[in-house]
Length: 99
Image 1 (cartoon, rainbow, N blue to C red):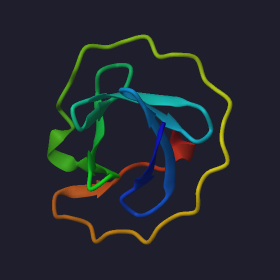
Image 2 (cartoon, rainbow, N blue to C red):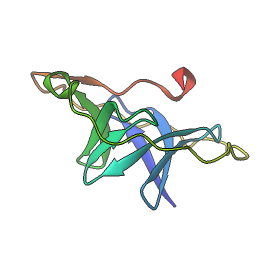
Image 3 (cartoon, helix red, strand yellow):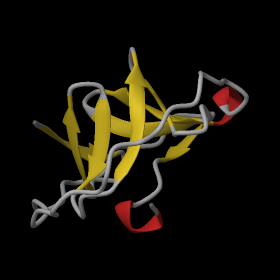
């Protein structure tokens, strides 16, 4: 289990194998390299400098769909970090509450 924060510094959840989970215990997506795709195969974002970020131009990228695993028991999230300056063409990964 590897804990992950968003680009703005919010504790999002964790990566376990190729799966991304919120700290609430909800399965969000699967990694394909550094990119993350939801259960329908739609691009959600990627890992850059150990933080979650979304590239605006990559929203058309797709992968095969899959059946997500069942939700899990949540964890108390870690304290947030100071956010990074946003790169042009990117925006912050959605907060865990949106999943």
